[in-house]
Image (cartoon, rainbow, N blue to C red; front, side, top):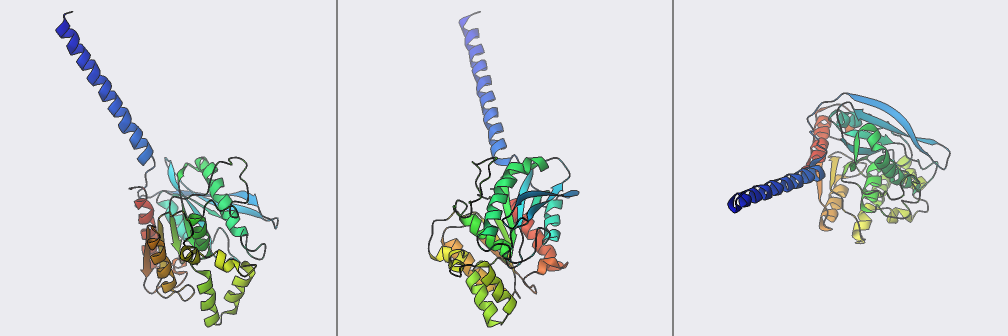
Length: 316
């Protein structure tokens, strides 16, 4: 074989190696940046099941309600924190929204949390923090991709979501160890919140102005001692310019919400944005605090916009 022929073979071999390396690089990039897909307009059948995830200090078995799309995963994962003014409701509170999200191809897991009559602040936050780590560990059982985990929180569940989202490493919130995987943390990819209690002191003051004794008492039973209402306050955390984690947030509120006034949410959104956070706010006309519990046009739009927000987190 002459020298010229050897050179041609060497060049061809080198080009082949370069092409192979380039293809491997593209494959690796596609795996790390887009391995889990989500189409908000997809339609899946959903299997619903329930499993315990921990027992709280009152001896109650806290349950997780799993909405599992029936198809080929991996599916993005959403954990749902329920509302109930810190004093009532459970994992079933947001079934219509949870089912709507799951039908579009999201693994949705709604969890019970301790209520104030069982134990005051920060017990429910500790449940939620533990539940995030528990779900990251177990998501694969239901074809979920743990790296995609985001939060949907309603009312006081939104309060919980905002606090943990901004302070995922808070030692008080993380007080319950997850022994199976102690390396896991409670960071989340995003937060979608319906009518969150972004400023519980402002919500309390509004309840006083409206003479809503039950709502007033809900604050007293949860914030023990009372000064914790300043500590566990998302708006005040921003006002104090504390060091925070800033997951993308999407807040939906009813224009007629007289429980948490829209201007309270607008103030929080402006403060979070000023702190460098990526946040969106959508106000729904002719809607109250819990409008998504009722079927209707604004509920349909709310479901659609939440799904679109989640989808946007996978196109960045």
